[in-house]
Image (cartoon, rainbow, N blue to C red; front, side, top):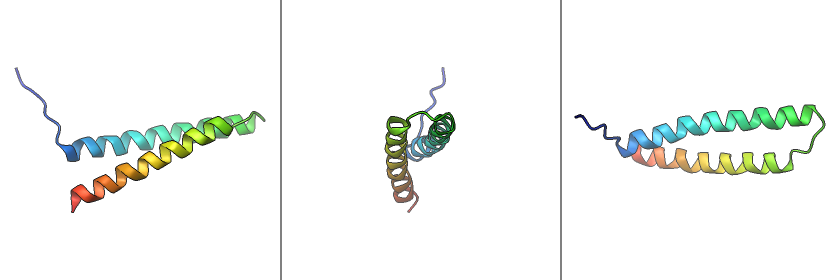
Length: 66
């Protein structure tokens, strides 16, 4: 039986990639709601949270790559 072990660098790179997808999806949702004239306050706030988390992931990645 083989065991796949993910390094910290690989994990953070995966988090960054996943974060990009999540942010893109949330931006699309906000745009669609805006186009339909619906409120986007909650969705926009969540997008901000996702973006803040992504910044932290990117900073972590930069530290690991030093």
